[in-house]
Image (cartoon, rainbow, N blue to C red):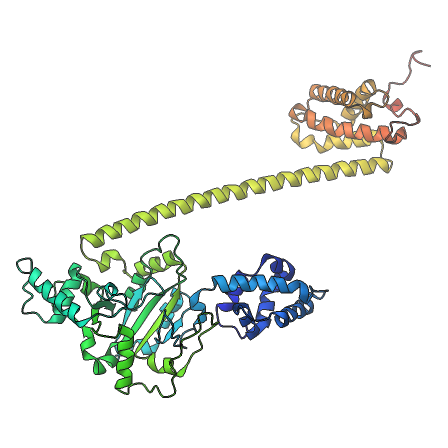
Length: 535
């Protein structure tokens, strides 16, 4: 889409009103592309859409080469389009696409350098970037299911403002050391960081955040769990930290336990960051520390909040400077099961990341759920296949009926053109020959059928359904005796139509049932007078 961020044009096409889709047809995508930056008006609840309406009308007229809808008719459609676009627009579409970064400065992303990728497979491609694979700069990752979740530890979440008071933090660590006496390893001689790490392992609310040196393990944790019902979550998120860069300025931030009794941590290539206590949350602590250490030049930066209804967050210089240290990547929350299937092929799943009974149980539960879903998918596919097959059979039958009607019309046309009755009857019999087991002499059958019909017909019989039914019955019975078998009724229908058309033509029969008698067209089928018979 020209002049539109990737994903914006596709979103607009998806939420276009049905009335506009009907008018634009195949030209809608080109029309959206032609809007360029004017498309931003569809995300602005206060913008006037008159100019955009004129642009759309002009573009449709140019492309469809016929009179287009007027600006006045298109305007309410564009207003409906805007209402849907503003209401349903996913948050991540406001962000630039990797490698550009914005600093949204809102309640969702704060001042974190933030961007989006086009899908989880695009994220895998991004991880090939040299900046993510430098030997001298070790990057660590954290995946989270909710796009609007902050970097909050389990202890941070206990406090409404997201800040851990010094006193509560120190008291909790002291209580835990005392509570562990006689219940496990001696924690009295361990450093605070190791005590927190042990507590994290056994379920204590701690100021630690789990990270992994593998971006794909973090991708797994971002997509592992389904969203709760009735929850809107358009994207999932992965945070990236350059541990090598940050260790120089913030050595106390990272905890890498040296004990070998945490197999989960080993299998997940895991480590922890320690959320600072006091007046700052995790993100602001890092950003402020970088500013204080002059690692980042914030000259000219204004800490102005982004309007909630802003259409997009532009890339800026501060975000570009911060991104090598810390950043957040939004991933569209689609094709979740495909993502997990890809990771399973990389041996990233519950069974490998949690080498304990819990991991084994979760791995088996996951297998069962996948198998049940696959069975449902196969059943739906089988039902759809049957539906398609039945539709094809119906279409074939309709085509056969249409062909039969066409043949009947052709026979009627031939009769009107002067083809003799005997030839019409013989041709109808020949057309059915393939479905009749007996040997057929079409001309002989035709002669006998016409003779029989002469005995069955009566004046204006074509206008009386009962008389017409009797004619068909008599012809069908005779055809059965001749050897037509199961085709007798079908052939009798065809012959009745032939005889009716001939009767109407010969007797000048109109719709009122009136006509003048004509010549006797059955005379040729009657036996000639012989030996004094007849006159």
